[in-house]
Amino acid sequence: MPFSTLDNSISRLPKGYKQTPQTIGEHLLKVRIDRNLSKKVVADQIGVSPSTIAAWEQEKGKPKVRQMKSLIAFLGFYPLPEPTTLGERIRKYRHVHGLILEELGTLLGFDGATVWTWENGTYAPLSETVHKIEEFLLKPPQSIPAKSIENPQTVGEHIKKRRLALGLLQKDVARLWEVSEDTITSWENDRSEPQIRQYPKIIHFCGYNMFARDTKSIGGQIYRYRTENGLSFRELTKFTGFDADTLATWEENISIPSVEDRMKLVIFEIIK
Image 1 (cartoon, rainbow, N blue to C red):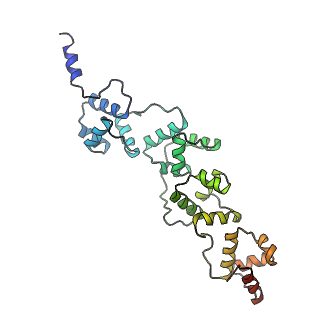
Image 2 (cartoon, rainbow, N blue to C red; image 1 turned 120 degrees about the vertical axis):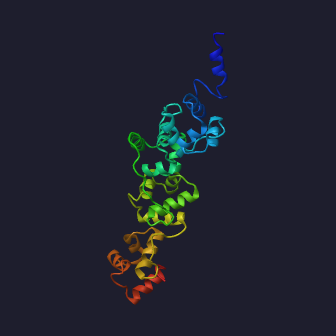
Image 3 (cartoon, rainbow, N blue to C red; image 1 turned 30 degrees about the vertical axis):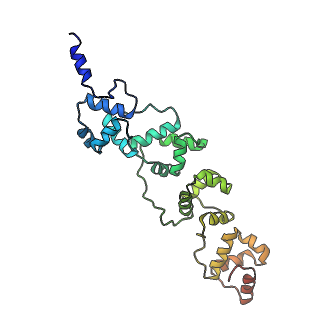
């Protein structure tokens, strides 16, 4: 029979084997069988268990982003359709380089949740941000700075920690504070700092005053009062009667107010 050899060869192919694979599992199965490799050999090369390989091939699970990098290296190609949108290109970049959302966000200067919205097409980045992303995707990722916000030190770190704890996007906080999303990004990455008139909203959002750390000295109490009320020295001058330079020297503890002036500060509830 002229087709017996071919028929026998086809019959030996495992279930799910396709000449034109579409899914990650189908690509993996085809490459493994074509190369005559066992699940254990493939698992060792990718860094997972043979049962994980079986699950992927049977469409019972999908590789995590860390595993995608090793899987792509093993296959020698990207096992998903070539991206046509910016979001798909971002996803492919993460897969190829094994980056989780938060890591890519750190490299781009945004949080992981924001990157997720771009990747899934929920939100579109601003035009200037699109240009930044386009340039970034052309290069391999640089080392990710090891930075923890468990013990925030800067105003930006305090804002970011609270925002992530609440599950909010930078876009959400920007709308809440009536500033641009780029402003929130700049603050969180310590590229700029908020003005004192914005301090009350930040203090209320975080639930504590991260600006005023010295609340015992007269200068520290004056600064605390200004931060909680968002007042410049000029604005504080308008209702206290003290000139701005005098208030500044008291706040910096360069000089100390007289007993009479202290009483006025107490009356205004600026100091205790």
